[in-house]
Image (cartoon, rainbow, N blue to C red; front, side, top):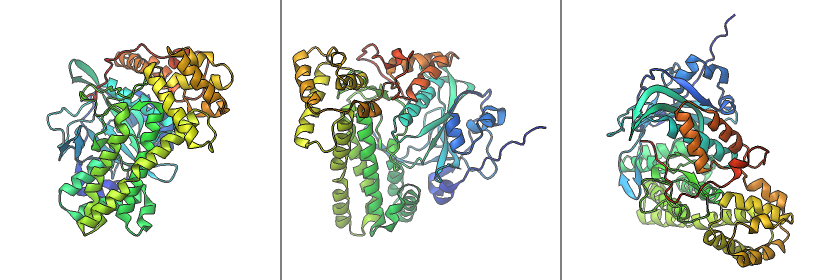
Length: 485
């Protein structure tokens, strides 16, 4: 007796509420779709049967070729500052929002495709994606979720059977990802540029309802929305910094209203601690270097404030004054999140006087930078030092006098080693391991990717047999990643 296929229900709230920002579009037909990787746990969370998704109709859903009744796939419109330069019309040039799924937590999630073909926003692009960059997004977003960092999540990567022409001919793929939404600072910039205040208000109301419902009860809901996004982004970027994540393309169209990390193109994790680290092939000036990320986030939020001004107050001077005051909360919020995170990484007691904690943190960062110490593994070695074995922590420094003096000051504060192990990961997607997995995956061998996923999706649990996933890779100052367009 055959089992009836499940009924997949995709909402069309975005397309209905904001038709000016939604261009109906169908995905290109994938000639020979083949599932490469599926996050079965995420599938279950959004009410999709993993076994069905692995079958022919499920795979066709994941590339946009099987569209459930009532669904309206759309390419979303947005603008954005890219490397500081304003582009008034970006939008989904190779992506589609299939619709919204119900999540077990009661909040809707977008089901969104990347690499599904050309749209009216494609400009000169082909609208396609290659296997390698889509597998990168899958593994890095899975790692970020496991680290407890808000992120869009990859549901699946499907090879299309269509070649993609870049510098060479590569196998094509579609990424299916899930997010609280795909609303960005750039979405508001696009709506503001239309001079349609009703559209801007409907967009803001949609964002409030979807992400920041408490703002609806505030005396000034739109100012409260901005304040909520400031808080969400301050927390998010602090978390990036604490684990050594470098986004690589912090354009305003990659800055979410929800406070989730989005778009894993030229991204990487720090090897040696270096505030100037840049991993993007197109960031020639280092605008989006690791150490610049908090400043860039604040700059992007200022662009959101500009877009919201007509809703904040009818009087522009008052609106600007209110927005500037609200934006002023970013630095203290970021600073508090960063400081609390660093105290946790060092196992320090919560009540420790800041006059003791801050110099300790600052002096350590100088030592790490000057000695080019691996960011991730150092903090795990420091956990050993808190238990009495200081040699593993000190042996990675050339300046032994400097680290010995620091360790003595730190150990005198009785750091909590077990608490440190709960926040300092053993495994992150190290750049050389990611490249190894992607190269194998492009050639059809997914075993290295699966082994890497196994390590990074339980990042705090040190396990036998995974030593190479914890070890620093070879230093390559010229290492760069690409967005795949």
